[in-house]
Length: 188
Image 1: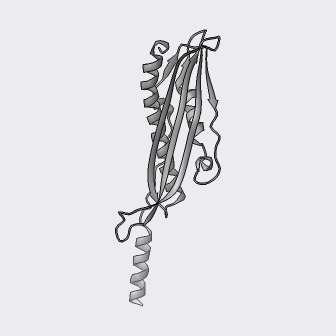
Image 2: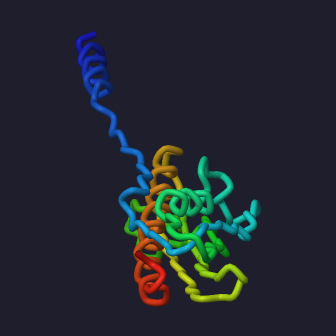
Image 3: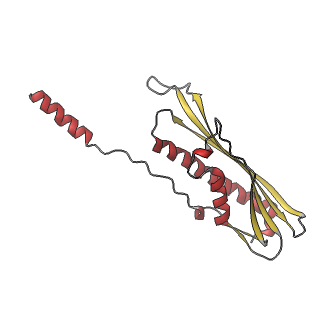
């Protein structure tokens, strides 16, 4: 009887241990570069077609990667002026999940992991009012991460959201460099 009491006491104390809570990723576009473009308007053209077959998983997210780009553009690009048209074309915003072998796994590590890959391809064009091209640049970014197969849904969402956020940060920084380089005379 005494052993059972000790066992129950141990189980009670062990079950009262705090559970690790994973903080979510906050998408705040104000942390990224702002652009004031000498144009009458900023147009977003999303020609990327979401793929709903394996290995693509972007469509499973609450907010997919192409919508994150659209939100970033809406929050951070401002048209200032009475002429010219600035277009942002989303050519690719794909997110994939594939199984990979973990060849460096130790005895108790998982032998198979998931690899998540994010790829962005965006084209920036500035046209005059007659639709003659004044300046153009193409921005590309890819980023990847891995996780174990046996993780919670919350952990998976956090890993993917962090990947998308970091990819958005990369595309913002790369866009700033290339827009200043190729469109510097049209930026305030």
